[in-house]
Amino acid sequence: MRSGEWKAPPVAVFWDQSLPWGLICIDSLSVMGIPFHLLTAEDIAAGWLSRYRVLLVPGGWASHKVQVLGEAGGGRIKDFVESGGSYMGFCGGAGLALASPPSIRLVPLERMSLEDRLPSASGEIWIRGNADHPVWKDLPAALPVSIWWPSQFSSQPFPGSVCLGVYSAVGSDFLVADLPIADLKDMRTPWDEWEKIYGINLNPERLLGHPALMEAHAGKGRLILSYPHLETPGDAWGNRLLVNCLTYLDSQSSRHLHGGGVLKGPPGRYSRSPDASVLCCLERAQGAVEELVAFGERRLFWRWRRDWLLQWKRGIRGLEYGALAVAMRSMVRIVGESVRDGGSGAGWMRDAEAIAGGVDEFCRIARNLLVQEQVASHAGGLSKLGVVNEGVDELREQLFGKRMNHGGICKTLFDGIDRSLLEILRFRSTLHGT
Image (cartoon, rainbow, N blue to C red):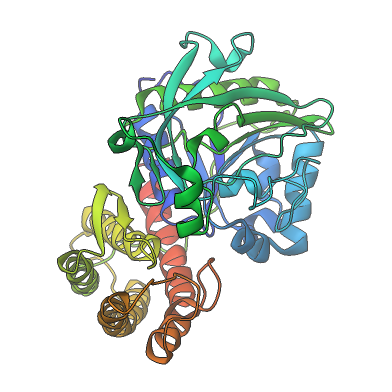
């Protein structure tokens, strides 16, 4: 879609708890020329969602989204959909709408149990579409998209739900855990044996034929829930399918927007540009993060799979390190574009210094952890969540908490970055008059 072709009102994007998925989402929307406004849980609870026809929820941990929304925000989203609004969610944003906790239970569709699904799949996969549905207009019968460690829908759809696409074949860079499927195509892969060793399901056939995208109804509204990340940058076919989905959802919304003029999103905190001192502070923090990532690369813990996504060694965390690097790059880039002579440093600098302090603490502890994980990996299997040794376990709990959905210092740091990025993005939109 070329800029200017989107004729509908802006899409509302739920920003909170989406790093780095929120960043790739808004970048892809910008490339496709689809206008959007960022809404926080606080904005939604305050009634801002009523101004829109479509709500888009990026990926990220559904449990974190549920927590920040609370009963007020979750209730507002439910009212929005049931009164005729449209909802689109990717991965964690799809899971937020399901009946299986943690969620806000917009539809009676369940997640597949962990024991039955393929829990560690990523990369390109082909989906075969429902050719009779409008979202497949002018698209081939099957096309490649990307998945990034998704859950799966239950195979028991509820009345009124429609399967929009099923997984049909793995693609060129598809991985299960750390196993590239393309490298195994000429082997007689003993999946049963390997699954016993890994302790998880690995056979890609567990995914094939299962729903990838679902349409559902709730009251007067409708939802499209997608475990494939159709917003993945550079995925031409996935991006085209996303445009079709948003166009369809907007056309099906029965919400009538009132008032003349251009729809404006919630205001940001800043009315003046940041000054150069703010940029310098953030650049120092970004440098510390880049060195930490390089530190891990030198130890063969991870590599850049895409320019916004790390591929990490089994048994350690990688998503959080990559998310931090991508968030800091985006923050520095956008602040750099916004710096003006005579800008203000006061409020901006408070945010920047808080982030820099959090980054320093995170990087200091993470370096120690990575060295200890490297040593522990030579003593046997290294489990991401299991007990390793006293030193590793203590540092992991400090940094990430005890659960897969990160807590600890990481959660505090990410929450601060989340808020600061929101303000930077909102300020940029005022500069461009959007």
